[in-house]
Image: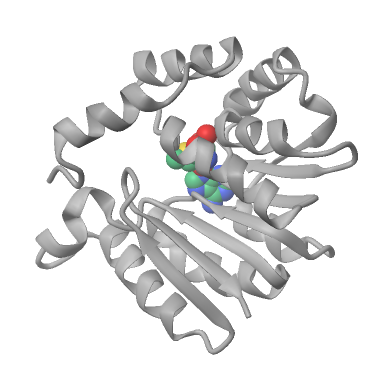
Length: 209
Ligand SMILES: C[S@@+](CC[C@H](N)C(=O)[O-])C[C@H]1O[C@@H](n2cnc3c(N)ncnc32)[C@H](O)[C@@H]1O
């Protein structure tokens, strides 16, 4: 299912200014290899969130090869950090090359392993958490990540409309069921105020109140 009218989608993309060379190369890599990245519309939004919240501590669950981390990093001040988590070593190696080329490597620490376990072990609290792991893990990711968000902090979760499968599949697949459960739970948290924004594949923005 197209979530956005294709003409509107084209309009939004045409309106979006060209990206710095390194982001353009990362987008091309995603296209050539069918790698799911957040893309420029969501990338700009993540970048904006750093400015809006003065974030200095960011944790990503599911970093791929660093496209979303580069968007965050371009908005960070000196000393701002992004903890990147990724289970695939090759993605991390590629990510290190791209983040060095983008001159943001100083902001970024890469952790190889399960993002949920790494988040569980983290002792810090974060201003922004990006959740982009495998979709069946979303409910558990929420459970683990939410306590690690500072009050006033924001948890962003990608793909929460899942190309419309959340309303189309009956019975839902494991990944769709994970998203459906996550969406319900994040609205029900007593200290969350959230909005589901139909940008690209659906973004859940939950602020800890
Ligand atoms: C959708 S891609 C992330 C893209 C990245 N956020 C971006 O937009 O540039 C999801 C990535 O998360 C990784 N991943 C999925 N579940 C994970 C988990 N539980 N722990 C660590 N990495 C995970 C996958 O290997 C994949 O590279």
